[in-house]
Length: 158
Image 1 (cartoon, one colour):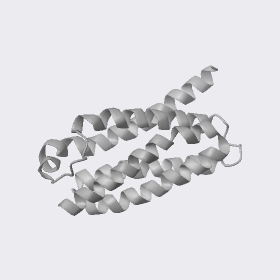
Image 2 (cartoon, rainbow, N blue to C red):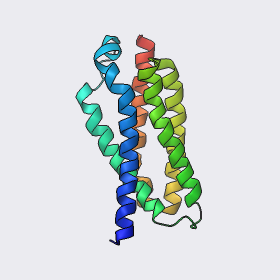
Image 3 (tube, helix red, strand yellow):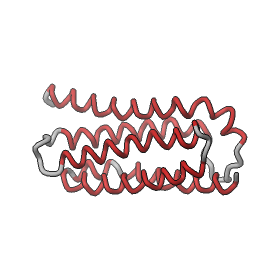
């Protein structure tokens, strides 16, 4: 691997992990307090599971981002794909803000539906540029699909 590609890969992964870190700044203070008081469905995963799952997903996002970025900004569709990636990453962070900081499962649910559509759009754009980059994002879409249902259920139970 060329040194320039190594740095692109590292930066891509760090950008995604940093987004997760920002989201966790909204999340972590609410876990033992507000979140602990919510009624949750029987299929709610244990709290310890979320950090490793999100870490893996952010790393996969970073690798996917790298595969698109290394194609070059002059390659057809790359700028659009990177813009969609950026929007979904901001939406990803915003979900934690709505759910945990605002303590609003309703607005978080509305937001996660928008996020879901941007993830799908991103996957479709990434597939056109690099199939592997698109495939790496499928676990993210599946997890956000589950998270959307979980978010909706928590909203309805509370």
